[in-house]
Image 1 (cartoon, rainbow, N blue to C red):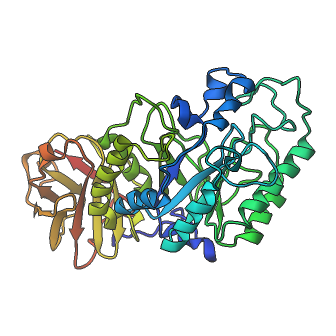
Image 2 (cartoon, one colour):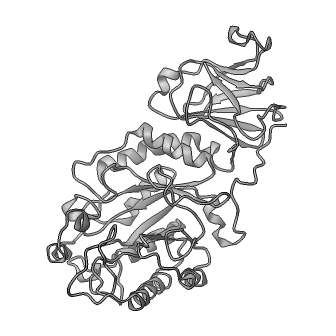
Image 3 (cartoon, rainbow, N blue to C red):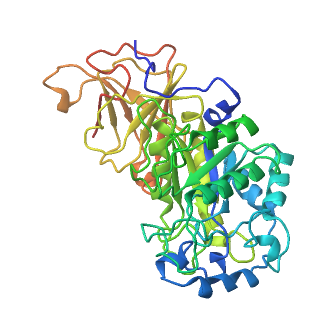
Length: 434
């Protein structure tokens, strides 16, 4: 029998953190002072600015149009089920009212605690909230800025001290995990100094038992974080993972004249990681007023329309990760839930028929989830199968020209999953695109 059993699929935590396995598509928000100049979230470092050139932006930060309800509306309408927010990026500017730094939003013209408002909105909707926190800090005098990647060169006015900086970091972690209600994720970034201290994640778990922790902090955490379709920060075999990607190619924060990814690229990126059993975090950067730009919101809306149409092929479905790539097409995969198989056709295919060799059993029904169209299935021999002198299951009449700008997902409903030998157990071993 064809089976979805796979020991490397992914583990469960068997505690409150298991929310992570049912809410698999989330919204990432990069926002801060860098939205004012709208060039890049690492503007200070990438433009080689001085602190004296950058710090005055805090005196201009006044996002009067910030409305967390609008952010959540955009996320929920797209089928997203959790949110991760940048509480402090590399520039050290805190978007919450920390007691351990004066470089914070409540000292800006805006005055209000951004995180407090967002947390209240999330809790009201039971929408899981995760917190991003950068280990690198370009402003703190005790952080050892040594000119490594994503660091400033040594600053003459600083007094680098690992112990003092880590104490500052722990104090801010305690604030974030104490003052803003239930937190569902802690998203570390840029541990350039490669500090190792398991007590910090243990503190998070003690204060926030439902909180999953990524692998960019002081230990391996709970899940891996492949970024922008790269394998950096990937998890080990069997370890949960969450891919992250931004709608913009150049920047994670708001950027004027951004080069946006195509809808098709992002759909197929989401499909790639969700069919492999992971989560997916898609990022946008609000502008200086606190509004998610129209073009970014439009991308999420269009992506969400596709996602909701094919969502059943991800939620509760298991990947067949042991199968080789589909012949004649890259990036295809199969997921399974109950007696249903879901054929994900992530890349271009040349014809209107899909062969599923060596399956011969006809399904009860074949449906193109993208638009609900029913497809014909046959198992008679075709000329290309003259060597075998037998036919295999093929799905016919796939409207390939209509699917050129999307990621097609075909649902095959069986009364019982078909017998499949010769390596087909576990994945789409011999699917041929004609």
